[in-house]
Every structure is written in C-alpha cells, then in structure tokens.
Length: 108
Image (cartoon, rainbow, N blue to C red; front, side):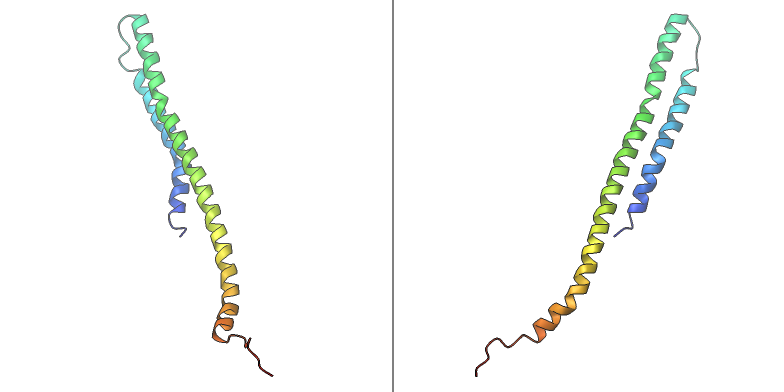
C-alpha cells in the first residue's frame, strides 16, 4: 500500500527546486534583447521578471499539496496498520468461539 508514497515524497521535495530553476532561467531570459528606449526596456524587463516568478509559485504550491497529501496518507496507512495488527490478534479468539460454540442450553 505504501508503494506510491515514496514517489509523492519525491515530488514534494523536488518541486520547489524545479520551480527555482525555471525562475532562474526566466530571469536570465528577461535580460535578452535590451535595446531601444530605456523606459520601454525597463517596462518590458519588469513584465518578464514578474512572469518569471510564476514557476516558483507553482513549484511551491505543488510541493505544499504533495507534502500535505503524503503526510495525510502516511498517517492513514499507519492507523490502518495498527487496526490490522489488532484484528490479527483478536481473530483467533473469534474463530475458536465460532467453531466451538458454548453450550448455552444445559439441562439438569
């Protein structure tokens, strides 16, 4: 049952770094083609810089959701494990009672 949880933890750990990498490439790309009027270039640069921060925000959102889902599923899996261990301890007693029912109708 815990097969996919390691992949979810990997997504939660690597998503911010991929977002940061995309942001760095976006910032580097925003400085290309800086010719023309200074005011026009500064406006375009501000637009490119603000757009380059979107991958970082997306990476952080994905990491937050994946981390929360991983924690929730790991906790649910641990609770299920405890419940199954408890059921495995009680099951033999139930089987003995079912196969050998007590004699409730005793006549003198």
